[in-house]
Length: 324
Image (cartoon, rainbow, N blue to C red; front, side):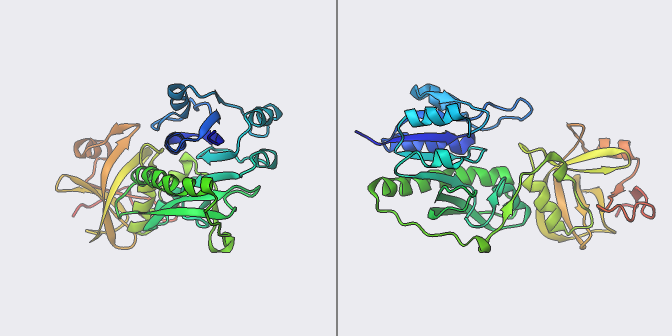
């Protein structure tokens, strides 16, 4: 008889992780997932739908420490618990149930970027590599011994969504390699050096506000870290909230005084405080695309001065600037 695993999962990684366990022959008597948030745009696969395809019982409790949930998992008699992008921390009562252990797949190269939104944080900080980590779950989040990792590259103009697509494939590769070793008892576990990494919290839409006192690389990193399908970066200027939903970095020199937003050769650019510029590939206002003609009609000028985060120069820099 094949071994039994209860899966806690959500999002694309949750669906793919479930696929891998089934492919490897594990019996899945129960899956725990989340109800979709009606305020969140769901652009990823549904774990619930995967369960429907395979006729697997699925439940969506509000909290993982609910006594009825613990009893439901106990009744499933799991040899293993796996957590794939489940959004809540599993407590000691759940972790103690499976005799062969509980394991989590995390979207970073642990011990770096423990906690929430690891891909977004890695892109925001300009990292060149991240990856997926399978580790043993303990009461402290993302702190248990490491089983295996799979690294992926972050290219200069990758968005967080593009990196996430790579991560999904890396997660599948990692699980296909590591889970058979777990089942066979031939895996190795390496304690994490938590001092070598940091813990990060969740991000809110308000965290997408741009600081035009930052360098071009930093501005670009924030834009691509929160680009759609995430809420997007924005700046407020001249009474309008501009949404900067895409950018391209080439290390080019700014064309004029910074920070400012302007068009050149029918393309939008932002000159940044460090004397470099980035191309803005997607600019919007109130959710509608903002092209050159509409930009000029709205602001009445060829170049728009951009405020720094502390707004210290708002009184001395006009909203309109001379174009190059």
